[in-house]
Length: 453
Image (cartoon, rainbow, N blue to C red; front, side):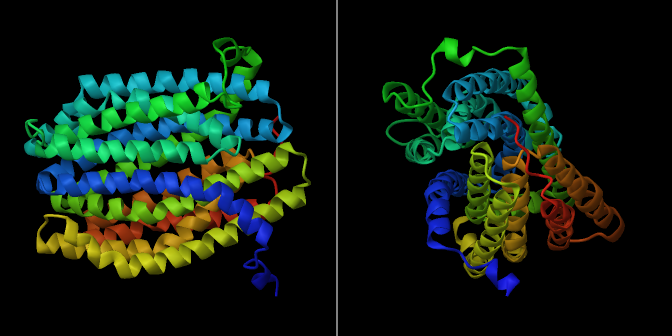
């Protein structure tokens, strides 16, 4: 009976969860759909272009996770301040996050503009892939600044329960990006076809438009998080110390994750360009389902952070985390089944060889099986541990699962047993099961529930 009770959800729980998570899922779905649309367009340019943009996006992923981790780290504090309704603290901690994330984005943008060939060459030595990927990376690098500014708005708005505004911003960006990509990639309305560079330019302009929309909604609509320069920068060294203490483990956690996924990309590259193309297409499709788990995880972190800030008991916070975890797993099962049966339709959109199409289908079905466990892991790491302020344990969990389990297994299998891409991916998926094994005892202990403010 106790096990069954984990999957019984009252109307209030479902309503509150949907209010928070649906806009988050909608925003991530828009972003993933845009990425999917981009790659369908790029897919018409051939396998070299797919592989090149995929590798360039690995660098973007490093920027994305490092910069967004600063914002996420700050949002752990902001969500607890929102529970206490301390608006002045929300604004100054948003200011700290803005400064630190801007420094990060300027660094990544500069490296991408100056050393694009070196970055792509780290993953693949194919000259055509390096040339195409470098051209894309140079053109897309300026978008990192606008993306960073949008991250900060979104993190603060989400932490105060305003998840619909970031979703609308992403929708606007999606529409502009889709139209501009079509014009620039294929050369419409008198513009010369620009190929992958056109995709990069479309992304850059779309990110600028999204940032301008968020600025308008916060400052011209007098949103509660609207802050003057004085309010944003009215912090002292103790505030900075608290922010860094909270955010640094998140940054390290995401750096570990992105370095791990970079190692995975290197493993795929050892198998050749076909394997890179297979995983690029498979990951694009996977992201359309993965975003449901991310949305639920972030919603869980907001609920838990607000609950701690409001002074709820440890047992009450734990019960909310328990419900979130079981609900996430259940959604993962539904998404996994849907994913499994829709996988064959993915190959219709990409101009690749029959052997690559077969590899893509195999990898997608492995992803479908793993999805419920991935969702459960995210409910612990993104939801409970980050929302509860136990970000250091989340970091340790990611590190052990990736660098002591999945990555060693992957590289050993390549060099000693000459595996194919499907077997390699199965071994890499051991990361998800490792996370659950490491995280579950901590979750049961309730030690992850910490009042930071």
